[in-house]
Image (cartoon, rainbow, N blue to C red; front, side, top):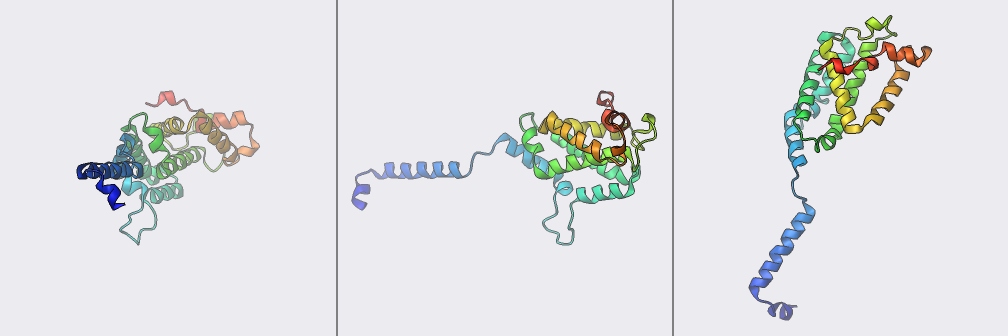
Length: 202
C-alpha cells in the first residue's frame, strides 16, 4: 500500500483526500435548503407555543395544550381568547413562508395537530351541546373575528392537505356533532359553521 501511494504526488493525494471528505460530508449532511431555513424561523417564533420547554421538568404540557384545554373547559370568549390569539400569530408566521415551503412546514406534526384540533374546537363551539335552534344561532357566541380564524385555518389545511382531506374531516365532524345523528345531513349542514361563506370574512 505504501509503495502504491508513493507513486502519486503528495499534492494529488492531499487533493483527493479533501475531495473525498467533501463528498462524504455532502452525502451525510444534505445542503441547508430554503425550507429548512424557514422552518427554523418558524420554530424559533412558535417554540414557546407549540413545544415543551426542554429546560423545565415541571411543565408537562405545551402552551398550546394548556390554552386548548382551557378554551374547551370554559367554552366562552374570555376562555378562548388567548388560544385564538396565538393561533392567529401561528397562521401569520406560516403565511410568511414561501408557497413551496408551506406544504412542507404545514405537515410538521406540532403545526398540523394544532391546526386540525383547533378547527374542530371552533366547529364544536359554534354547534354547542345540542343542535342550534335555528340557522340564525348556528355560530353560537363566536364573532366575526372567530369565524375569520376558522376560515383561515380551513384555507391553510386545504392548502397543505388538499380538498379531499378537508371534506373527509368535514363529513366525519358532521356525523359526530351532538344530536346530529337524529337530523338529516342537509339540516346539519345548514345549522353548522361548515355552511358559512368564508368569502365574507377577510
